[in-house]
Amino acid sequence: MATNATPFPHRISTKDQYFEAWKMAHDKPQEFWGDIAGSYQWMKPWQKVQSGDFNDLDIKWFEGATLNITANCLDRHLEERGDKTAVIWEANDPKEAPITYTYKELHAEVCRFANVLKDRGVKKGDRVVFYMSMVPELLTGVLACARIGAIHSVVFGGFSAQALAGRIQDCEASMVITCDEAYRGNKTIPLKAITDEALESCTTVKDVLVRKRTGGSITMKEGRDHDLLPMIEKASSDCAPEEMQAEDPLFILYTSGSTGKPKGLMHTTAGYMVWAGYTFNNVFQMDEEDIYWCTADIGWITGHSYITYGPLLNGATTLMFEGVPTYPDAGRFWEVVDKFKVTHFYTAPTAIRALQAMDIELVRKHDLSSLKVLGSVGEPINEEAWEWYNKEVGKERCPIVDTWWQTETGGIMITSLAGVTESVPAHATYPMPGVNTDLVDNEGNIIEGNPAEGNLCVHNPWPGMARTIWGNHERYKETYFTTYPGKYFTGDGARRDNEGRYRITGRVDDVINVSGHRIGTAEVEDAINEHPSVVESAVVGFPHDIKGQGIYAYVICQPGVEKTAEELKPELNEIINKVIGPIAKPDVIQPVSGLPKTRSGKIMRRILRKIAAKDLKDLGDTSTLLNPEIVDEIKKGAGL
Ligand code: WT7
Image 1 (cartoon, protein in one colour):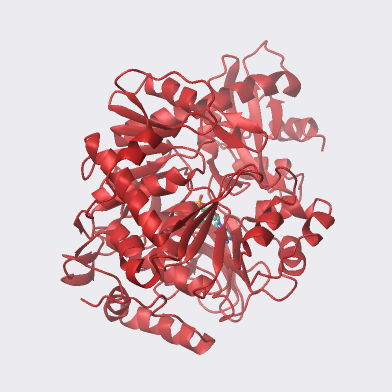
Image 2: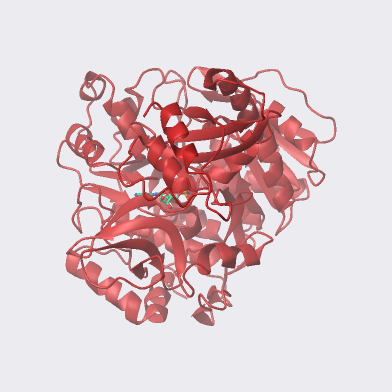
């Protein structure tokens, strides 16, 4: 099968070509994706490009083919661009020297790490959990897993011991890789101590590899814990890529939904590779000499697809940042752009809004003339933030790609293509080739014509989609494919304008998006309900200037317990920190004596959302509630 060393084949360069590609992918998906996949390196060819549908949910791409994704990320580039910089790593502290890896060096480093894993007995199909900060070994470590066919599962370093333990147990990991501590601005986070606590309740983990970063004091458990860096240094840089089946799992990534525990979305090898590679290539439109920086953390899907796999599949230079946007000051992003002459910059609306609120000189004093393309991801971007980003950062000469997608989708689904299709403020705009979107009403009827507004669905399989929820295929079917049978329901609402361009309006289910972090309201409620005085709670999102959404918790305490919001706050925060992590702390707590319920006992969240938003218009008919009088009490308590 073809091995194409040219960096960017199948690049869409004009709007007409975009429409042609979309139509071709729609009419002849097998030919379309077969052609694109042909530019990757395979060990054995596929028998069939795609099989399975949204009824059988036995979806396969490139079945019969074998490959290794790291051969495509690394080995494939060695001849043409072995000395090109693959990764630039910028430390939390600007005074600490950056580290760069050429493709040759990255290849060697990944092979060494892979040999460390092998030496510790990690085999194809084993699960390895990463609980690290943004150190280079997080990136080389996930690639090392992929090299030997182990399944990586990265847990964001802001989650608690209990949340980490839940994920380790769910995927039955045999190894955890962590740091002694993480640097985060002027703080440190005791990752190893948190891991130790998590492991008290985990029985499957045999080894813990510790990447020393701060030198802070930690305890090392004899026989279980090992110092990672010296092991990597000693290991051989020769490690042949494991031959993987197209549908072998590549990684599991946990994310929150409307109900229950976090779900381990499982992505497989070949389809994910083609999707991450194709979308990165076309959305960002990079040239060979460009420098790309995505500010996400590898603990989220954005960091998997668009710090690690997407850029490396395309032979690009990807920047990885350990720190935070506000350290040492709120000009850090722009300082880094200037320092490395970043050309492509991809960040989240919450960061844009936070930096927009700071002194404008923090932006203007840095030279941002290297920038060519700006990206936004993670939540709807409001017009004001879009305009500011365009004017102050892009100086009105950089196309903005507002990329809508999800952990489940593996890669970007709706977006403009930089400089190829138009950027429209606050609009993700057009679906990628291969993505067939529908807006449906609450009964599932497709809303035809433009403009339109409804629930956003996709009605065809695409290569990058998650194939299942780890260990629970029924839940996968139930969560995504039963609301509107035969369709993947995204959980988002959207509008479509007269040109067929999409604007995502936000989640329509019980998921909230706080600073781009996806939080399940049920998970927060479960944590709050662990408080001994709490009888019941209801958590909703409300509009927040910087975070996009804030967390609002209505809490019922036991009869006789008269706690004020101020008294409850530290107590509930402590529990939430323990059960989930600080990212899920409520912004507002309101003690209430009851919650508005229907006669069948269902909480009327719509009313609670309205009150939290201080928007009493269209509160609707409350007289049919089981307890209509409670609405006035809650309004009063909210100061309305
Ligand atoms: C949810 C998915 C995509 C990777 C990071 C988040 C929201 C994401 C956009 C956007 C409006 C967006 C959606 C989606 N979202 N990107 N460009 N415009 N909303 O992945 O944690 O799985 O969250 O983020 O609500 O469903 P995630």
